[in-house]
Amino acid sequence: MRHRGWLAAAIIILVILVVAAFGVAHANISALPEPGVFETALSMKARDWYISRAASSQLPPAPAKDTSSIADGGALFGMDCASCHGQNGRTPTPIGRGMYPRVPSLSSHEVQQMSDRELFWVIKNGIRLSGMPGFARINDDEQIWQLTYYVRSLGMHIEDSP
Image (cartoon, rainbow, N blue to C red; front, side, top):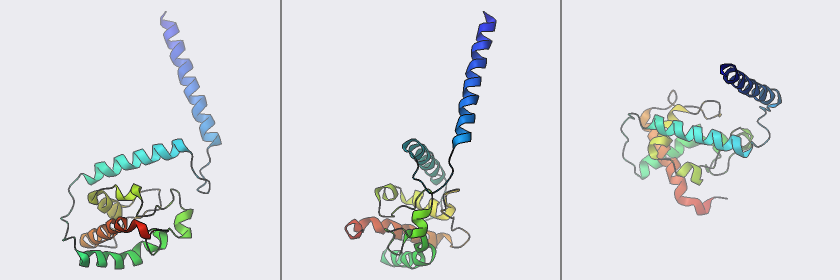
């Protein structure tokens, strides 16, 4: 009876190894085709969970959220972000559309549903293996908050998006 348990475990392990080997042998890591539904759902859930967890840690205090901060964030956006997200933040450039994952419109529900803390964390730290760089070595915390406020303001003008 004991041998049957080991035999069943060995068969299950063998099946898992065969499936994994098949998946590795036939995987396409090209960034050109759109990913499948499963890959997209799994990667987005993992990304969202990680960002939410990371953004719950202590963040530097946010400066006042006023028109001056948003305007300063817009100027920084033009220098730091527009080359991928487009000048208006809503129409990704050819570079942004060529990345995987694709660069989102910053006025999209996907982006605008994030909290300010999450947006700040993403802008400051970036997202590994996505093309989204971290700006902590380029901008100070106040500037990153200004970028956060600017990105948030893009959701307030959805009727302007293409």
